[in-house]
Length: 250
Ligand code: PGA
Image 1 (cartoon, helix red, strand yellow):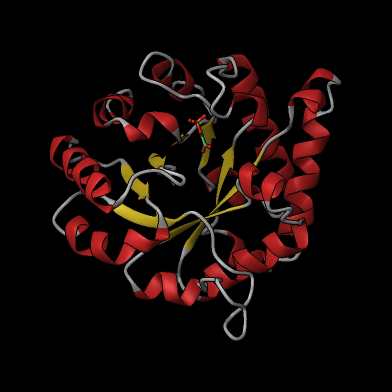
Image 2: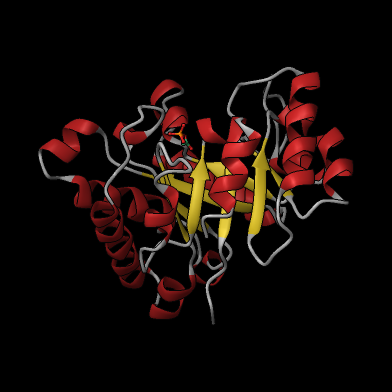
């Protein structure tokens, strides 16, 4: 089976509704129609409105986060069921900003992935080491632990829809990108870990995206790496031209 190619734009907490619709329409109208799966992660409050715009575009939409709980008295939270009900098909889980600023734990992330799978939302599970972990050469064990701690709580036959994003924290929003060699090494390592905790079939078929200061200048070289199946793009996805140019780098 050939792995899917995916480009996802994580808008984070940017743009009011007017600006967000303007950006989305520009991206949707100028992007190529092709086999690449293209996803936008706008602020969740826009998902309902965006679901009608994306119908005529070659794009999917997703949420940047969801609650680990099914439903109930959790003021301010948004359930996977709600997110799916407004037309989203994907959900980011465990982005480093969620881990660092909102102290999300592996246990919570396992629950979030389960809620996504129960509601047919495809989770994009984010992993990646911090700068001090890279500098002390512990990046491989850090990422292995992040994967193992979360995925061991998911039944093996339910794991296949999950996508992985490798995002070194030191590269996110810093303008410093991992080199193609560093990216390939880590993506190959992730496949080995996946093989050990799931199966060879899953490890070979699971798309693994790279994220962290990906831009039109460096995307082509990164996407050319054997174990890279696409990108999770932050800052550059807020500029239609840059984002489309990254899509065209494949
Ligand atoms: P960046 O963000 O492209 O701005 O580095 C990537 C991400 O946080 O997903």
